[in-house]
Length: 633
Ligand code: C2E
Ligand code: MG
Ligand code: MG
Image 1: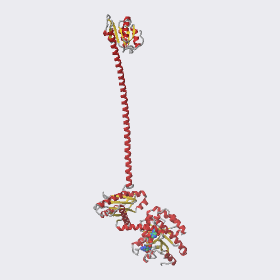
Image 2: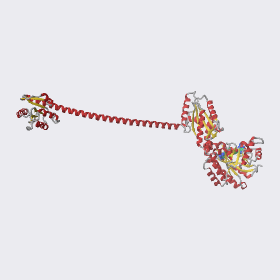
Image 3: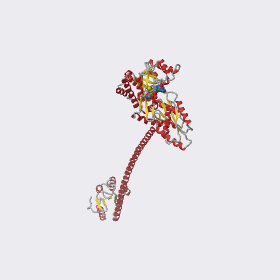
Image 4: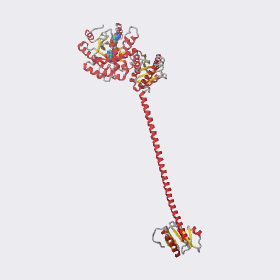
C-alpha cells in the first residue's frame, strides 16, 4: 500500500484492487478531485490499510486473488475499528456483480467498470457526504446521549437532593414538633405552677380555705355592691376558737392542725351556697354572708355555728370540746373600707370573748370606742413603767389559828396621771395581750422581794413574813423566768423560802408538761407555790397530786356565800380535805365577814385574806400594819 504526501484533502480514500491499471486510474481521478488516496493490491493489505489508515471511504474490488471483496467487506464490518467505514464495490461489467450479496456483506454502493469519472466522483462524494452526515449525526447523537445521560444523572442528583431535603425537612419538622410539644408542656407546667402559686397566695395551706387576701377582695366587692344596690345586704362573722391554745399545747401542733381542719368542716356545714368561709390564720375564721335579709340571718348563722360546735371533736383518740366566740358586723353602705368591717367584726368578737366564751356579739359603735380605748391603754401602759406610774400594794394574809399576819400578797396598782388609781382588772388583760406583763411582772417581783427583805430587817420579830407574787400565763411561758427569779433573789438577798408564787389553774392546764417542770424547778429553790383562784379554772384535780404545790387559794366565789348550810361550804370543806390529804395548806380569798372567819376556822382552813382583815395597802400603811403588830383575835 502506498500513500501520497499529506495535503489538505476532501477525504481519505483507500482503493483496494488487484488491477494496477484500475488503481492508477482511480487514484488519478480521485487525487485530482482533491482526495487523499491510499491503495492496496489485495484484500489482506486492504484490511490492514483500513485498520491502520482509518480511511473515510474504501473502494473495494470484488474479484481479487486471496481474499475476495465480499470477504474483505464482511471482515471490515465485523471489526469494530473499521465497521463504520463505507465500502463501495468496484466491478467490471463482465464480472458478475452480485448486488444483493454486496449489500448483504455491508457494502453501500457499487461502481461498474469501465469507470465513468463523473459517476465515480459523484458516488464517492455522495458516500462521503453521507458518511460525513452520519458522523455528524453520530456526534450529535453522542452529544445528545451525553446530554441525556447528564440530564438523567442531574435528575437523579436532583431527586436525591430532593429526597435529602425532604428527609431534612421531615427531620426538622419532627424536631420542631417535638420542641413545640416540649414548649407546650413547659408552658402548661409553668401555667400550672403559676396557678398553684396564685392558689397558695390566696388560700390557707392547711384547710384549703380562702385566706385573708381573698377575704379583703371579697369584702371590697361586697361593699361596692351594697353601695349600688340597696337590696343587697351582707354580714361578716369573725370567729375565734375558745381554748384552742390549750389543745394545741397539750396534744401538740399536729393534733391542733387536725382539729382546725375538723372545725373548718363543721363551720362549712353552717353555710348556705352563697356564703364563704375564710381562715385568717391561727384559730381565727371569717364568714362572709351575702344576700341576707337582715342581721337576724347573721345571728342565726352564729347560733347554728355554736350549736354545731357543741359535740366533741375526736382528735388522736382524745375527745376535745371547742367553743367559739363570734363577732358579727352588718355590712352597711356607711362603711368605706373593708378593713373597717373586719376591724369591727374583730372588736365584736373580743366583746363576745370578754362576756365569757362561747358567745356571739353584734357590733355596735360602743365596741369601737372600747377598741380605741384599748389601743390608748396599750400606749399608756408602754409609758407607765418608764414613768414609774406603777405601785405595789400589799394585802395581808392572816394565819387563822394565830390571828396574826403570816405574810402579804403583792397587788399591782397603776397611778394613772389622768385616771387616778387603775385596778389591775382594767389593765392586766391588756398587758397580757401585748406581752407588757413580762417587764411589768418582773418589776413587781423585784419590788415585792426587795420590800419583804427590808421588812425582815426592820422587824426581826416578823422575820417569817412571806410575800405572795402573782405570775401570769405569759410570764410563766417565758423562757428565762427561772433566771429572772434567781437574779432577783440574788440581788435582793431574800431567802427564797419566803417567796410564794401564785399561779392560776388555767396557767398550768394550758401547758401541763412545761408547767410541771417549772414548778419542780421552783420547788428545788424552796420557793412556795400557790394555786390562785382555785375552783374556777378547768379541773386539774387529776394532776394536782403530781405537782409540787404548797397552797391552794380558794376563790372568793366559794368563800363569800359560806354559812352553816350552804353548798359552797361543802365545796370549801372538800377543797380543804383534798389539800390536806396532799400535804397542802389552804388560803381563803375574799374573807369579808366575821362569819366567814368563823366558818373557815371550823373547816380547818389555815389562812384567810380579805377586806375583813384589810384591803390592799400602799407601802407605808402596810409597814404600819406590821409595826403595830396587830392581832385579829
Ligand atoms: P388575785 O391574785 O386573786 O388577787 C386577789 C384580788 O382580790 C385582789 O384584787 C384583791 O384586791 C381582791 N380582794 C382581796 N380581798 C377581797 C375581798 O374581801 N373582797 C373582794 N371583793 N375582793 C378582795 P386586785 O388587786 O384588784 O387584783 C385582781 C387580780 O389582778 C389579782 O387577783 C391578780 O390575778 C391580778 N394581779 C394583781 N396584781 C398583779 C400582778 O402584780 N401581776 C399579775 N400577773 N397579776 C396581778
Ligand atoms: Mg393572787
Ligand atoms: Mg385570787
